[in-house]
Every structure is written in C-alpha cells, then in structure tokens.
Length: 127
Image (cartoon, one colour):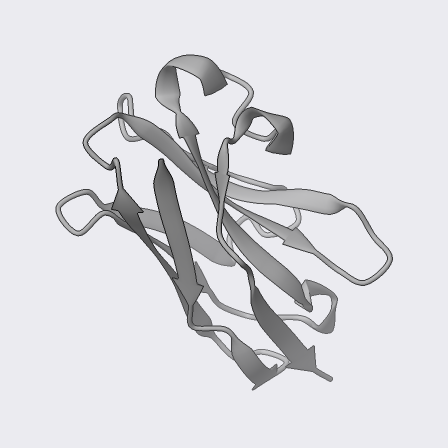
C-alpha cells in the first residue's frame, strides 16, 4: 500500500504561481509512475502531468504545456507540480496519483491505470 498526501493548493490571481507537493509513504520501495490529475466542478478528472519511473521521462497535457512542470525527488518520495502563468480555467481540485511502472506503461494519461490517489488539494485562480 502507498499513501499519498498533497499540499500547496490555494487561491491565486491569474498569472500567478503555485507549487503542489505530493508525499508518498508506505510501500515506496517499488517503482512507481506518478502523476497529477485535476477535476473541475461538473467535469471529468483530467490528466495534467506524469513522471515515469523508468527513464525519468515526463509528460504534460497540451493545456498546461509550457506553464506547468512536474518533477520528483525519489530520495524524499515526493513529486511536485510547479504551476506558472495560472489561468482561471486551471481552477480545480488537483489529485496526486501513483501506480506500478510495469502496469502503466504508455498509458500514463489514463486515470484508470493508477492504483493510489491522494485526497486532493483545491487550486482556485481568480481573474
């Protein structure tokens, strides 16, 4: 079992920045891919960014490319999401997710592939 705890959400004006953190605990000795998803009111949970265990490659959704950066510190079992140039449409609950790298493979954008989820952290961007 892996437990995930997000932090760093809040209220920010458009154009501002926030940095989300997700600390993993429990069975963290295994190789996990980690990702961020977000869900706005009345909408589905969408992929934001992923960090692969194998090779350390990162991926991000087109909607955040060039503005959001995912990174991870394996020594601290923590993944980060640096969010710059925030827009009101970025307002959502942001969730951290983790899953076995051997299972996720190329489906890093699919929420169904991730076994473990954090409780979510609210990000609100005012116009």
